[in-house]
Amino acid sequence: MSLDTLANVKTRLGVATSADDSLLSLLMDSVDTWIASYCGSNFAGGNFTEYLPGNTEFLQLANFPVTSVTSVKVDPAQGFAPDTVVDATSYVVHSERGVIQSKVGPFVARRRSPGLVNADREAWTRSPRAVQVVYVTATGAVPNDVKQAYAQLVGHWYGQVKTQTAANFQNLDQQKLGDVTVTYRLDEITRGPIPHDVVRILDLYRTPPI
Image 1 (cartoon, one colour):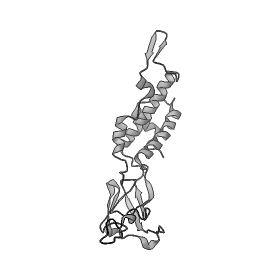
Image 2: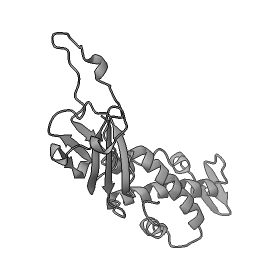
Image 3: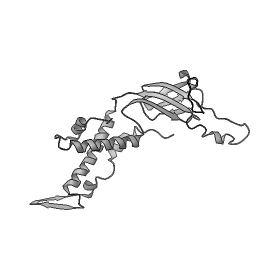
Image 4: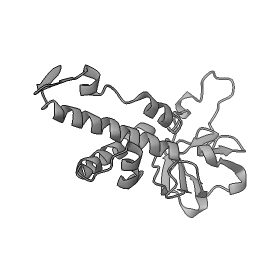
């Protein structure tokens, strides 16, 4: 599902004709994939099931803001039967940032051997999929600044195609058409890296590393 409609993208870019609708649609597909990969989030919303390590008091979900948490289950054996559900009173959901914080210590407590330095070292990465979280995020609620970054990146790649088409996909610095001379700057042809404004906006929505 695209982050925005073709009509909205064209409006943001000031594209008034339908001549390049097929190209813009293809670029939108590419930008959808790029943003999902860069942010690690699914802005389209819906129902999600994630598996996380348990030796922590904080669970960072990939998608947020969170509308509701259906269940949190803890099971180092990874069976996640009904009796592994964690009581909702033992954790707090920070909905806006997609963080679940335990009130009672790590979701899977570390084993410790008193008196031995780093005795529990092997347990620090124990059960990497010990916690299952089922949760919901709102659909049709893509933030407006993300939609702006989305349109900007579509426009960035669209401009690259149009410039290269005008230059006949040749490494031209200058082209003369009758009495008109067109000069191409290198940054117009290559369009450079991802625009800074796009990265700046999307960085606010990247899933924080743990």
